[in-house]
Length: 97
Image (cartoon, rainbow, N blue to C red; front, side, top):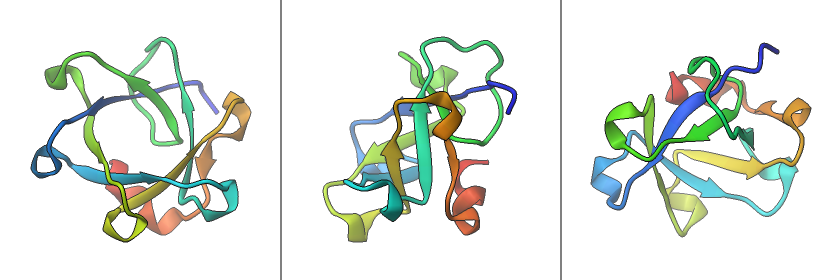
């Protein structure tokens, strides 16, 4: 783990998103365990370290949070500890490259 973060922007409209994301209630139901980074030290990597940026143009990926699990490309669970972040379902990893 190198502590690198992906720059993420949350868009207002589904049509503008690269990936549709649903936040699950339980870690066990997630494809990806996400840790929110406060700073971007190096903005790369695909291991669930997300830094939310203010401007769409600075983002590596644009996401839209959907209301229904069935509409999501990716199910995430936000974790409290950086060491918990990572992929639980590697078949979805390509979505964040």
